[in-house]
Length: 428
Ligand code: LLP
Image (cartoon, rainbow, N blue to C red; front, side):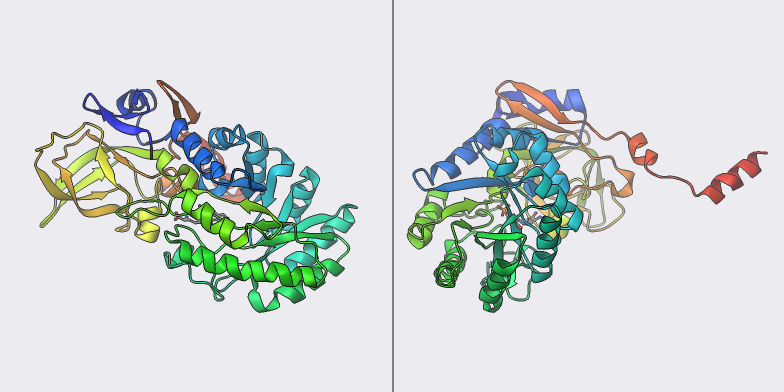
């Protein structure tokens, strides 16, 4: 469900014609619908009405301040994996005591900053991390509330690059060692055990892998309580997958029904860290065609957007639906085309042999379902500035990130002192 549709022959974001935004900010740009963001949040959070629970929006999916604020205004907390993300969450108005700090490589400086801010909990992923966190907390006269992320060795049946719950993934503490590690945690002076945590991967489109993981963790919760630990919180990790292509992942209500069945009576506050399902289809990447060029055997549409703006096709061979901004006639001739960016790599290909209505230079296209892991994963490769992000609400829109000036990219570089000296000598 989203709020992008053709009206009077042109694609709109809510009530705003995409062309109006393009006139204001140029292309490429990302556009987000606040109505879609809000709806997704309400559907997910609403599915757990009456259950002691908290939704911690996984900021990594889209960390624009306006996006985080949209969820914060609805009562969401934040799931963060770096000090940078913590600062974004705080700046967007998420209170520190609604922030959970996940991630396999928290540095000591990041732990100190998070303790200073007073985050709700650390989801710890290894024994060395536990020891370091205890030391940092003791040095600050503080105690760090923790859960331990256990790796349940369950196959999430998703793309291998985003599967995290197998024993050969770098994430979490091996299932077999969980009780020992909890015992160590309880003995450390700077640590307070508050719960358990599991996350098996992203873009999971079936309930079975979640259920298998949650059952294992539920068993563990009982074992841990027997061992004398107070396990009040159960963090169940990221959210459901979303439809990029064909197929319809389970509805949040079905997910919630399964969660309630499996861990509803365990006596824990349930915590969720959804990212993709809240923001994914609330965003589009809008590009313009620079050239249409005829190869020997195929046609290429060369866009002004590239793999540095939307990495998912290059990185995961991900499918994104692509729509022309001008609505094609129902009987428009369609032909296969390769949609590519200007970057000097063959992986800079968004789609091959995609059936599209006939395209011409200057036409605008949108990549659908680009709200999650789109703008956040972009880079300045080929010294291409990061593109603007725009938020729409009804018939209003606002730029929520400016296009990065190329001067700002250059300003971070320096010549070496000896090059500067050489340049001065050369000038003399
Ligand atoms: N919690 C933890 C500990 C995570 O590692 C993740 C995602 C989430 C929550 C949010 O998961 P979600 O609800 O979004 O599925 N760049 C990849 C996705 C990487 C996901 C990493 N972790 C992509 O574009 O598909």
